[in-house]
Amino acid sequence: MIRYEKRWKASDGKASELNLTYTILHFSQQTITISFDKYEQVEGKKQSESRIFTYDIPSQQKLSIEDIFATDSDYLSVLSDIVFEELTEKEEEGISQSLIKKENKLKAANFDSFSVLKNTLVFYVKTDDSTKTHTIAIKKELFNDSLLDSYKSKELNEDRVKEWQPKHIVAKLPVQNEWIDPSKKVIALTFDDGPHPIHTMSILEDLNKYDAHATFFVLGSRVQHYPEVLQKMLEQGNEIGNHSWDHPQLTRLSKNKIKSQIEQTQDAVEKATGSEPSLVRPPYGAINGNVREYMEDMEVTLWDVDPEDWKDRNEKKIVSKVMSKAKDGGVILMHDIYQTSAEAAGKIIKQLHDKGYQLVTISEMERVKKDRELSGIVINE
Image (cartoon, helix red, strand yellow):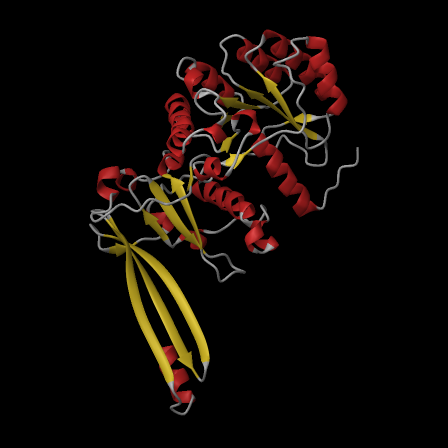
């Protein structure tokens, strides 16, 4: 206000304008979050600014990020990694390259604009070299060991009017790629139609021998019977994707049935593992506008190499087809419900490893591609 008055007086009384407004973003028993917006125009020069503050109602104090986390926790590193991951994904929106360099760990001040909702923490991040505010919602469960009890409480932090549901919520920690060297070849093995209590477990054993990862696109109708197999997948660092409930061609279904196929499987995987898949592979690779409508923020994953192991149940042929077409950055399609496929997978995993490939999940593959872009790494096979 004082700064505006000085600028107005310096302009010799020329036409000017100052507007101050506020919006309540969240109001619960525990906190209230308010956005203060300022617009001013002096000598034809326009400026706008928005600042977001959260106040703790019981103590009647403005909150900083340090106030809601335990002082001895490493929450800043977790937040910084999540922001890096989220902003990298939005690179096509024109975000500065310097903004998404992982070594640029963010400070507490980067996170002082936030809301504490019933199930999520929402951060309004404005980085040093950008005037744009990036809204990032994160599930509270990711901070179970560091978030203070009063801010964990769903009851105390539910909005008294209407709980706002962020469209995109970060539900799992970013993949840590310390074991992956972006300067070496990577390839992604993917398996459809499981889980299977014997064949999937056999594949998991072979992956574990070589510190290799894969992505399993599961059917919800099978997940409900073998939750322990999915838990083993995640325990070993593998990834789980949605492959529908019972494998129909989604493009031939009504919108309601498409929605049911996707959502039921999301729910089944969440019940078995505690988190929903972020990847989806439509059966037969069949996809259109109606199908995409019910996938929300999920990433559709297809493939580069298909040995048709479902049709040709011959271990040697499956191995030969895959190895003849294997390449850096490739995605291989197989099925973990057949014995021949599981046996072939064991040999493929070993042979790829011996040829210098790093076997990664789909998300790890995407991370490697981004790391290569940022570092200028080119792989020549």
